[in-house]
Every structure is written in C-alpha cells, then in structure tokens.
Length: 449
Image (cartoon, rainbow, N blue to C red; front, side, top):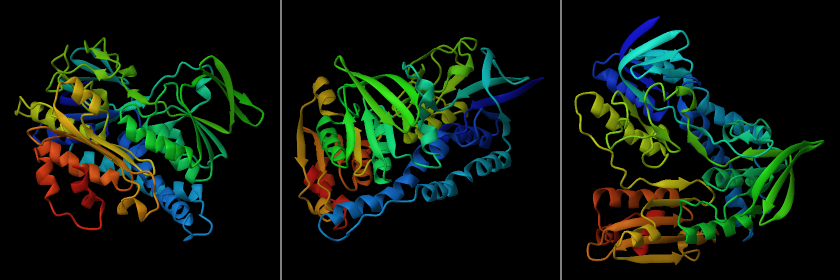
C-alpha cells in the first residue's frame, strides 16, 4: 500500500512533534512515525524523569550538608520505589497525551520502524510513504560499547525505570549521564563506582570547575576512577564482576548492577540512510545551515539526529523552528546556536554557556577571565555547600560575554542569565548594573563579571 504526504516526520520527541504540528498548522498533510512509545527521549527516558528523581535527592543532600553543622542528626534515605512511583506520575501520561494531541491536529500517526526504500519514499511495515519532504528527528540511543559482556549492562533508559536500587552500582562512563546517576544513586543509599576510560570527567565542561565537582563527588563518597578502561563484564553468583585496565594494571570491581552511562549517539541505524541517499557521520545526518541534508534535498534533520550543535533539548526546539520555517514557505531560516546553555544536574549542578577559555584563545580573541572559587559566598554558605565557583570570559574592548561556566547552588538557573546576555548582546557592564532580587543566586552575577 502506498500513501502520499507532504511531510513525513520520524520521531515523536521535542523536535519531531513541534515540526509535525507546525507543518500541519500551515495546511500540509503530515504523517509521523516512531518505533518507540510516542513522547521522545527527553520526556520519557531522559531529562524529565531524571529531574523528577533528582527532586528526591535534593533534600537528602541538603540534610547531609546541614547535618554537618548540627541541624539534622540523621539524614534520611529516600524510598526508591516511591521515587519511581512519583516519576511515573510525569511519564505515564506523556504517550496518551501526545497521541491525542497529534490526532486532534489531524496528523496521521504510524507505529513501527521507518526505513528509506528510495530517496523519495519510506516504508513502515507494509506501508510505503511517499512525500515531498522527510524530517529525521529520531533522537538518540545508548552508544555501542566495545566491551566483552556489554549485553549485561543496563542502559541509561533502564536505570531511570528501576523498581529497586541495588546496594552496589558501577557506572561505565564519565560524562553528564554518569555524573548525574552517581549523585542520584549515592544519595539514595547505594555504593557507587564510576569507571571512566579517559583521563578527565565531563570533557565538554570547564576543567577547573569540573575538578571542584569531582572533588565534591569523591567526598559523597563516590569511588571515581579515571583512565580506567572497562574490558570485560561477567555475571557472578551474587551479581557482576567488572574487569578494567588502568595504565596496564588489571583491576576488578564487584557490583550488583552495572550501568551503561557512557553517552548516546543519533538513533539512525534502522533508517537505511544509504537507500535514501542521506549522508551521516558519528554525530548524525550531515546538514547545511538550514538543516537540510547535504546529499538529499528532500530530507531535513533536527535535534539529536542532526550533526549540528550540541545534543540538547533547547537545540531540538530551535531546530524545529528552523525546519518548520524552511518547509512552510519561509525558506532561508538558518540555525543560530549562540547562547545555548548546558547543565549537568549533579548536586550541586555544573553549567556552561558560550566559549571555553581554550577555544576563545584558539580563536585569537582578547578577553579577561573572572575566575573564583566561591564556597565562602553567602549563596553557598547558607547551604553549607563547599563546591561553588565560576569562570566568566569577557571580551576586551566590547565587554561582550564570551562564555560563562558555573558550579554550585543555583548554577542551573543562573546560567540562563548568561545565556540571555550572550544571545542578545547584553554586555558585562549592563549585566552587572541590573538589580537582581537579594538574596538569590542571580544577585551573585554582578560579582562574577
């Protein structure tokens, strides 16, 4: 059976849903397809459930820190099963709500794996979909790991749906997923080990602030091992044994659960891109500044599926706006990822926007660096949180903020002020003279610039 549409969208996450609805509102015939439950990674298997579970860890962290000054005698441990029940209040309604919304918009919904059968057609099961344009917004999946016994690892999706948290948890990876899971699991009472192949954790963030967070993570305590490549995972009588190599030295770690927290890659494997004449690399579909495929003009890509920008939810939302504009008669809209913040939702959080110091220097920019460790500032001391600091890059002459990097209480919110400044050209002087409410995290900004 062959069906004809103006637009076929693959993926029902942030980007895919917004693109389908935007194109349908412009009067186009739209179909959307997903091989997983409708809703996408962020709402169902990533950002939202992670942040909900973090809500249970936040009071535990606060009680532990304030317990050090005698306010709480015995910090509580959250009930993991109750945490999961609370999380499902957010995730369970997503799929039915999404499907109702799409149906109400007049969008044809298909369930299954989409694959190209030619540059101008896709198949979903027995149905062949021909369209003027295709949009690939299939999100991401856990990366493949070159580890013997990799099939024994629980993927990050599964960790966010665990019915019971085991006592000993080993996390393979050293990026934001591993760091966030470590802070969550240790606050929930687990013994946590992080095993990172590289010599640094959180490679995409400012190294000086990462060092502060890693020191804090050690103190929780989390056993953090860098330069430690996992080679084999095997099942034992009472759990799992992880074998690793650290500079030629063989190490072993016993655990009740081993989690794949080593990052995600674009979910493009089942699309048969070659049949669609769609070029892609490790970062996703190769696209131009309009998010159009570099090799097939019928195809656009957005969100994690596109090899452009960082794999972030705000980026997916921005991509959706660009694709809709280019598909509905407003051709020429280009992406602009300036001022796109990213956050590691550890406790405390680590946040970044704009250029890092090394990149700004490599570009030949002239700038000053305002860098300080601020555990003695009021905003940190009132929570007895020693891990606090910032690094802000300000261009000489113009006063433009080139980059801002924060760790500590409220960093995940304060970073948005710097994102606003970078995005809209608000100089450091103008930011510093803005009266923010006191005492709040925002009130610290004047002292950071």
